Length: 149
Image (tube, rainbow, N blue to C red):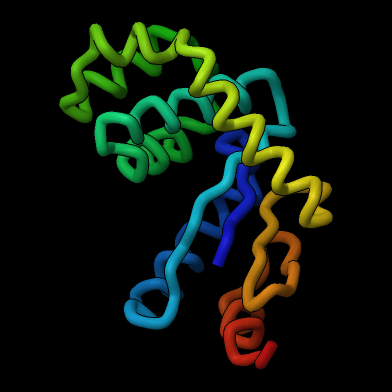
C-alpha cells in the first residue's frame, strides 16, 4: 500500500491511527510505503524534507510521528532541529543534510509519482492498484485490501 501524504494536512494526521490498526492486523500482508505530496502550505515541503533527512539516519518513522504530533505549530528550522535532537540524531549532520538538494529532489520525485497516479489531494492511497482518496474509515481499507486485481 502506498500512502501519499502531507505532514501539515489534518486529514493525513487523522488517518494515522487507522493505518496503524490496519498494519497491526495484517503484519504479513500489508506493507506501507510513504510518499510525500506536500500541498497544504509552505511548511509542508519543509516537513517533508525534515522527514527525508531523518530517514537518512534511520529515523524516518520517528520523525513522521513527531511531525504529525506538532502539526498545528509553526515549523521552524529550530523546531525541526529540536526534534532531531530528541530523536538522538546527529544534529550537526542533520542541519547540513536539510540543505542537501538531494532531499528536496526526493520529495519532488514523490510528488511527481503522486500526480502520475492521479492524486490531487491528501491523503490518498494506492491499494492493489486502486486509488483510495481521503481519510477513510477502517472498513474502506479492509475492503480495498480484499479486492482482487
